[in-house]
Picture: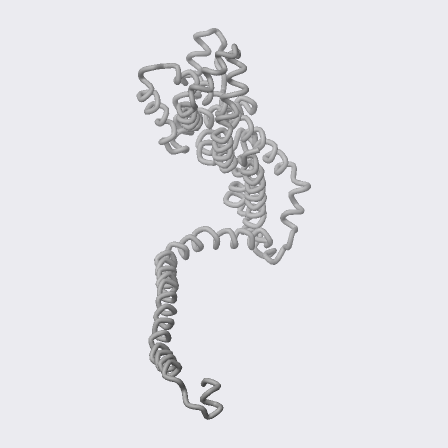
Length: 333
C-alpha cells in the first residue's frame, strides 16, 4: 500500500491506475510463472518415465545375465573355499585358503602354469607374426583378395573339438597323417606327433595357431587397407627404406589393432580346452596339460571339486590381470 494511503491522503488518479493495473496483472503473472514451472517439470518427468521404461525393458536381460554369469562365479569362489572331494565326502567342510595354499607345493600346478605361459605366448606371437605377414603379402595382390578372405574364415568357423579331431586323425596320425607323409617323402622319417611329450606340445601349439591365425590376418588386413597412402609417398620422397617405412610408419599406425588382436587371442589361448582335449586329452602324461585342463581333470576326473575350483579361480585372476595390463597398452601414449 502506498505511503499516501497510509497517511490518510487520497490517491491521485495516476497512482490509482497503477495500483489497479498491478492488481489486474498479478493473477496473469502468477499463472504465467505456474505454467513455466509446469513446463519445466514436464521434460524431467518424461525423462524419468523413459528411464524407468528402459530399465523395465533391460531388467529381464540383466537378471538373466546375472543368473548365468555372476551366480556361477560366486558359486565357484565359494567352492574354492571348501573341502569338497567327492571321493572323500566325510572330509567336507570349510577350508578357507587351504586349497590356494596347497598350490604352492603342487608340482603339477606349476607345470601346468608353465605350460600355459608357453602355450599362450607362443600361439599369440605366431598368430601376430604370421597374420601380419600374410596381410602384407595379400595387400600387394591386386585381384583375388575376396577369395582369400573367404578361405581364411574357414578354420575359424570350425568348432575347436572338430579341429582337434581333424588334426589328430588326418594330419598328425602316425604313418597315414598328412604331415607324416610329407616328412617321409622328404626322407625325415615318421614321428609320433601326439605321443611324444615334446612333439605333442608343439603339435597343439600348431593346431591353435592354424585355427586362429586367420582372425589376426583379417583384422590386420582390414587395418592396413585403411592406412593413408600420402604418408608413404612422403616417406618414399625422403628416400626411406622399406623396413624404415614398416617400422616407423606401419607399425605405429596399426598398433591399436595389434593390441586388440593380442588381447582377444590371449583370452582365447588362456581358456583353450576343446582342441587340446580332443587331440591329446592333456597327454601324453601331463605334457599338454595347461591350467584349464588341469582344473578340469581335478574337478571331473579326480572329483576334487574344491581344489579344482581354486585352480579355476587362479586362472580367472591371471586372465583378468593380463587383460588389465593389455588394455592399458591400448591407450594412446
